[in-house]
Length: 240
Image (cartoon, rainbow, N blue to C red; front, side, top):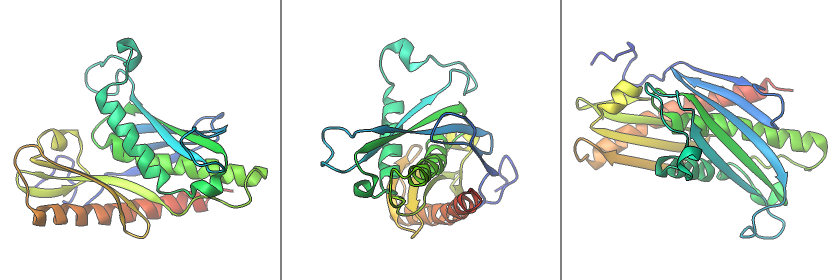
């Protein structure tokens, strides 16, 4: 099928990551996946939540969309006096995904919070948040090592995420908004650099889907994640 933006069925949208996008966060990156833009900032605080074993650290995330991130203005969560169920679900996903990248024992008694703020949404905001959030997290951890607060980098390896879906019965990688809104099946996939799954979210929105279709979508995502992790490594390798 011919995609809206002319991409191949297994092709990612153009991806760009700008590190050091803000001055004050211990790690920051602006990630752009097609027209989706997310600002990810990692902040380091001393001390960990009470549920964390003594001597270990914690990584968590917060997610929000600016009112005009989408085609129509949405209300800020603060105006509703509570986090929207969608934002709460997404930020839990991001937190779980990023914790999988870190040796929490090596992080020590501190917390790193990764704030993911969607400046513009055109599909795949949660997966972009995971991919960009990892870069911000990795930079913050390097900063801890450089300052002498940590003896070794607690990052275990890269983590990235991408979506895939079935549109008009055709499996496609990295759906933009128009494709996502009309998808029969939608799947979000988080993986590490070993090609192992960290999280898989699949939904039959227009119809049920088969195990074989799920495997096809996961395979598409695996190819996309491999490219994203290569980009992450290139970016982190170029930092001093």
